Length: 112
Image 1 (cartoon, rainbow, N blue to C red):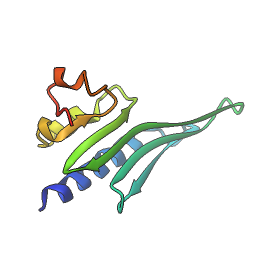
Image 2 (cartoon, one colour):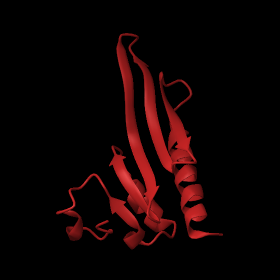
Image 3 (cartoon, rainbow, N blue to C red):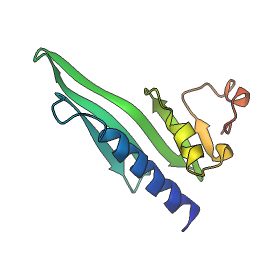
Image 4 (cartoon, helix red, strand yellow):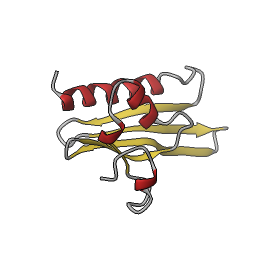
């Protein structure tokens, strides 16, 4: 399997698995949003808490650019970057885009 096809498949599997962690009784739902042509992948939470507070937000946003995985946002406790490394993606192929370019050199991941 081509490297980028492997990355696409893995990202989608991880986001789908994360979306299924919610209880069916939870009023907040997790939705996956996949743009296959643009290589954009998101996990979005939405619903109503106590019937009066709207919940909507992107929990995870990942893109594939220039043969690398760019983690644009990760608002979860179990970092998707670490999960990707555990599944065989080299840390050098992952950019933590939510860190400033100046700070990325202090992580184990790619700078760009």
